[in-house]
Image (cartoon, rainbow, N blue to C red; front, side, top):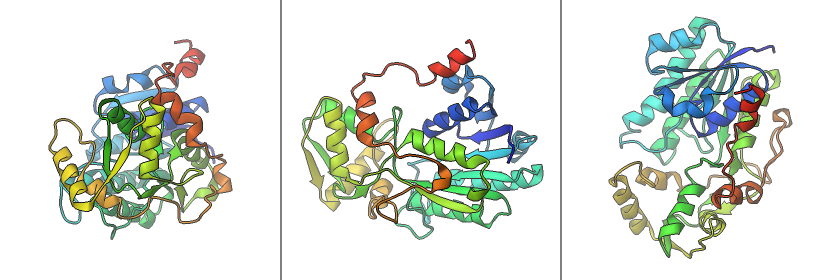
Length: 321
């Protein structure tokens, strides 16, 4: 499948930045809509990329963005939002209404290829608003007539992640780390492997109409991940497992703290089920052409602060910028 122009919605975010950089490396022309162009400074200097200020929740704007595109990738996702049944308005807008709008815009513009970021554990009947909204968004994509591919990653780690970095930051200031759900299991996957999966699937007919779980090579409990992040940051700390009521009280207090919450009650609800692949040991589908990267090979580098170089330096050099 020959592709030249790709619209990446959510391309300015953590995973999106890695996906975009790989698309650029392959010579594709990439359009990335963002609310504020200044927040995508790390992408603006890349070759063959157009960063535009746009509100993707506006149907007319989305219709214009999809014109003359060969494919659309949707990477938009949020972890926090107000409470509601079955989920609050922020989850509904980001995970359900936006995919609905994108599918409609693709149909109008004649864009057939669509790649969608969902999540491991996405389920319309899941225990958390995050999982339920992701599940409903996924259902919309599956019901469309597009050539879709869905990805369902476990927690994604990388230099800009808000998971391992959060625990490493907390370890710098607190002598003990109390966490809820310490025995819940996760299967973290390297952000570069996720980006490669998207890019390798983009023009591959074998991936059409398929959903892929994405997970790393090893399963960890949350306790093990927190201990690892603290140790890798140079501040090893003991981890205390909070009982259910105490964990919920802690999460509720964090929801009302200034800035973006580190934890919410909905995050705790998501941890009522393990976040691991359904088949173990996990092996990525061969058509994705990815080799799983161990967490121990990459995370200590950025958690210790030993890698100040920009991951985009090579692309800027090639563009002579």
